[in-house]
Each structure stands twice: as structure tokens, then as C-alpha cells.
Image (cartoon, rainbow, N blue to C red; front, side, top):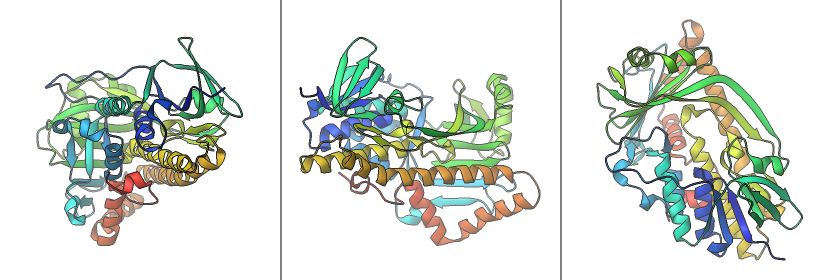
Length: 412
């Protein structure tokens, strides 16, 4: 008996929703044969609403992927904020000093380095694009999955059963799909907590992403469309409860000090949220009839804001592999097809994970006083004075470094 679907994507997060939209539009499969298993579609934003608490940095490569998915045109462009510069400095120096790293989109002939976008808006745009393309949106949650020789069988929490030739696990760091496929992971706990919030600053954000490395972890300011900023403040576990629970006045004062007053006085404009920081790396992204994307395959430290971008590149690479198989009339769940996807993405993601861990360890360990701090501070200055190195950093920020799927390289 033929499976219900060619592909079922499990997980309505950004990687899963984008993958479903791409597969319905570009994989050479009848759109109705692609299903997305997602609990609910994000509600539309009320006009004039403040920025959502959860935002993501979208690189140029990811923008192209979202355009190909039919999602970018559906976004309210007025609620996107382009960032044109990045300024990174070490606790041992100052943001305006010669040893801070600053690169500008204008230096490489680009209008910007990317956009800060609201996660909910991106999700809604991807899901709407998927539905409009003719994909099958199933409002249910996965309860269990069994993977056989010719199909994967899914049991939903509402009692429904589904079968597919290819099961895509986009169901997050605690992936049920990954467990069902018996794919193992390596986990490194950073013993840190990231605190996120929206803040107002006395001085304008200047369409610049700011980041300072402290001994307890990096703190970042990301520009938002309404002149406010989103913060991501990574701190040691012991420090986190006090920062989460202290008064607004105390938090504002401590945040301003952590940022060295780079934008003047800060004031909370939202609630505070937090999440634990860890690195997760699947030992393999694929098994017969199964592929992992996004957080189900990898989770990295957020200090460079690359987690969402890696998931979107996974989605594009998987779509590319399936489209190639479809053109050759191959089974999308065949291991030869899935191995091609894994070869393109796993090494890239592991290198990014290693780089983020090295930055976090190196700059955190030397963020106090003494020779180590002096050397790390000078390292940023050396990069800042090298045109070649700065261009390399800028290309990395744009998401244009390394091997990329075609949908990330070519504007569609």
C-alpha cells in the first residue's frame, strides 16, 4: 500500500516550517504529498504591537532561502530591522577603541549585513506559504514513530496515524523523531543561562549589532524596528537567578554596566525570559527514511546568532537533495539521497559549533585583567586593522562563507 505522504515534516518551528514550504515549492513533488505536523499556527500580530520577545538575526543567505520558500514577501517589511554594522569588543577595552572589531556592510558593497526579525512572524509567513502552495498542514503533535524498510509510521496524540516515505525531524533539541530513528547525540552543557528582553536605550542603536565579551559570558544588543533593542545576555548559572528576579531598576543598572554604557542608560521594555545554554550535536543526521534538521540535529551557543540560520540552510540543503532525487525518479527516503544532504551540512555545522565554543571559552577565560585579557583584546584589534580578515568576518556574518545550498546562493 502506498504511504499517505511522500514527506512528513515534524515540528512547526522555523526550520521545519521553512523546510515544508521549500519542499512543497521546489522539490519536484506534488505539494499535497508534503505534510507539516505542527501544533498551531502563530497568531497574526496586532497593528502597532511592540516587538516580540523572541527575535532572530537573519543573514543574507537565510533571506534568500526565505524568499525561495515564499515567506519573505509575506513579512511586514516595516517590522524588520536591517543591521548595517557589527561592533564587538572585549571587557579589557572599549567599544570605541582601536582594539574593538567593527565591520560595516558598506565596506563590502552590501546594503546591510542582515535583518533582525520576529520569530513568530517568520513562522507564520512560512506556514502560510506552505498552505498556499498546496501543502498539507496537520494540526497535531507526534506521539510515537516507527521506521520500517519502505516507510515511516507516525502516531499522533489525537489518535491519527500517518505514513511517509521520508520523515523529517524538525522537532527541536528533545526530538522524538531522533529517538525513533535511534540517532545519538553529544551534549555539552555550558552551565550558562541566556537572558533575553527588549530594552530602550538613551542613545540610538545606529542600526548596529553590539556585543561585549565579559568573563561571565557575552552580552549583545540587537537593533529593532521601533528603535528599541533586543538583548541576549549570557551569564553563569549562579548569576542568572538574581538577574532574572531583581527589580527593574537593578536590572537596568547592571545591564548598562555590562554594556559599558555604550548606548547610555537602558530601561526594560518587556518581561525577562531565559533559557539554558548547551551544545548538542547529532552523531549522524540521517537514518533510513529519516533526516534531522535544525535543533533536532544541532544546537550551538547563541553568541553569533547563527542557530536559526543553520537550520534554514539545513532546510534548503534537504530540499536540494530531495529535488535531485525527484528529478532522477528516486525515493526521497533512500539513504543515498539522505547521505548527500548530511555530507553538505554536518561538517559546516560542526565547524560553526566548534568556533562558537572556542570564542566563548577564549574570550570568557581572558575577559578579566592580565596578559590573557591583553592578548585577546589585541586580537580583535588585529582583525579590525586587516581588510582581508574583516571581509572574511563580514562574509561569515552574511552567511555566505563555506559550501552553501543553491537556494542560499542564488536569489529566487
